[in-house]
Length: 153
Image 1 (cartoon, rainbow, N blue to C red):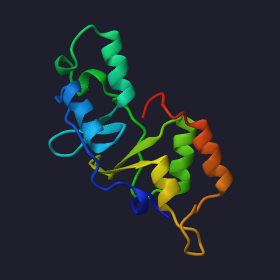
Image 2 (image 1 turned 180 degrees about the horizontal axis):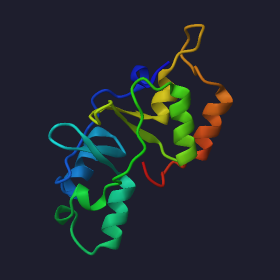
Image 3 (image 1 turned 90 degrees about the vertical axis):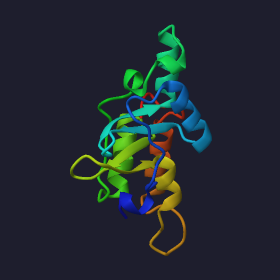
Image 4 (image 1 turned 30 degrees about the horizontal axis):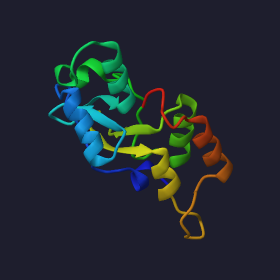
C-alpha cells in the first residue's frame, strides 16, 4: 500500500507571509497540528507546527500577528513521495520522531500530508478488514517512539 492511498489529499496550507495568528486560527478551525507552507505555485518551502508557533512566540517578545510562518517554519522537513510504501514512511517518521510528512511530487509540489494516524487508520489488511498492512509491532513501536507533542514535523 502506498502513501497516496492513505494521505490527506488537500491539507490546509499557509503561505510564508501568513502571520502566526492566522496560522494558529487555521490549525484550530481545521483541527490540525501542522501546516505545509507553500508558494503560490504549490511548491513546499517548509512545514509549520503548533509547536513551532509556541516556541517562536515564547522566545520572541512580539504579537503573533507580527510574526510570519517564514519566521517560525521548519525549512528542511522530511518529505515523502506519493508512491512510497506506508512501511517506509512509518519508519522514516519513527526514526525522525515526527508525526507528519508532507507528500510532494518529483518537482517539489505539495500533493498531500500523511500522519502516523493516517497510516494506522487508513490501511487495510490482506483479508480486506480495516487494520494494518504493516506489522502491529512496527505500528506500536513507531507510535511509542514518536512523542505526542513532536520535536518538529
